[in-house]
View 1 (cartoon, rainbow, N blue to C red):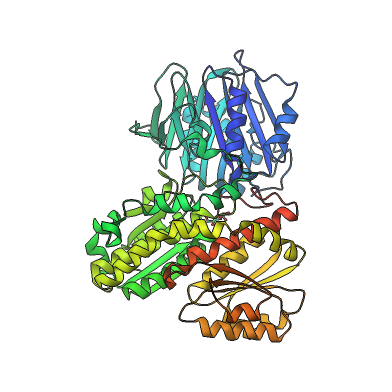
View 2: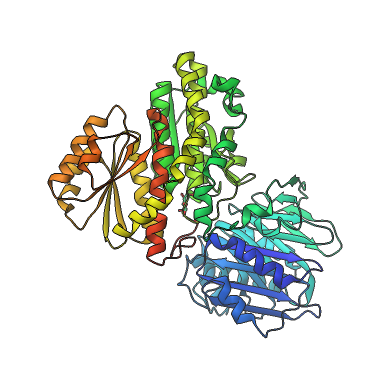
Length: 614
Ligand code: G6P
């Protein structure tokens, strides 16, 4: 949700910033812009509506020499996507430029006050209020720019990660954060900053994650200095990045999402590695083992998440209730935070977030901790906010996910939730050793099973042609397959813009069945499990109304094959492991339908991968 990049050094500032923006484009692509301070001190600002490619075209022929620069790719919140609302924003006197990720909640009050003092505004953004405020403070108190930034931050309510440059000073870059992510890369005589480490991973592996309320001052030839808003020096805590550049490239695939779908055998192996040990007889999840008393006494587990991660959370509920007999509630983080949640120190909250930065999930984590619950995070992005704000947790280790619609992160989350449930069951003895070992052995087979499912890609590509021009889809499933149906429908909506509803198959009778006709296909997730006979009746009910059916079934299924128009067979799996297998054909189906429709599958309209605003 907006990406920011900054660079100070002797490299080609423009090239580094543009490449960085491309890496951060998954965060938003409504507009892009850049501010450069050249060695003579002139400040040039270039910005335009649309993607980073548009910005590059716009910059042709401009003076792009610079000693320092900042850049931004936007997901519009305050003000429509337009050239004027694009970042960087600048003070009325043209002295300073700012890029910002986040939202300033009290911007209206601040804007009214600044207008009263004679400030004129050009854009509809909250960010312009911020830059004018900084400059107003600087001019009216006579302080330096860093002090003005600190003072302005104290007046702001909301979330921000900002980078600031000033005309006449090609040697200074200032950054600050509150609730929105910001990481600084320390190179040899050069310093980078960005919303995540992807823009600078090829230049340096040394990264400093700025904390809430910190201000960083980057000056040419000087070590990085970090202070809090009261100007007290803070520790510069350097981490080593483990990311590699090849993880950020398409690697021969036409789209990131297709690469990520096909990476799943490998990402699931990485996810399992070291956690399913003794040939499958033992589950080792360190975050559970190290906090075993919390899980032994847990009376209730509350899962909080958004989007695809919430769907993984729903599967987590089935897994934990089945294996551990602990009641589980699954909440949208955005609803949880405003629902007057009731939590005690006997509750465990599990927060799931691929990015580790989703604003609502992060807020839910903070609320849960304030209420005394033990909070366990499941994230992908190493060093992101949620892993740092939780009591313990577990990474899914699937590598950077660039496609805006989540695929490999979903299966990684479901896998980790399976391991978490098994680890708790191991502690609480709610599964026998035989049951645990059987599941452990089956988990070790999952990457190979996923490889088999991926071989169905050509078949799904052919099938997608049959369905590309449908305007509505129904996705149905029961038990473990119900969240899979929700996730399948979400994937289709996200990347092909076709309306799709995910529904518990039996609930279909209470409304959606009225929609069924030849024009609306039903995708039914129906592996052989304890609800199989029930879903066969639901398939018959759709068939009886003349609906077209595509069913995901277990290999060898004859009953549904005779009822459905098309079947996709997946390898047999224990019921609780089936979602990882059945979700993959649905990812492929959505992908091929979206490609057939000519959609931008990696960057679907209006979406952003990391939602750092409410
Ligand atoms: C956005 C993304 C989704 C993601 C959701 C939650 O909407 O486009 O793919 O599931 O945010 O993100 P998180 O990073 O918290 O899993």
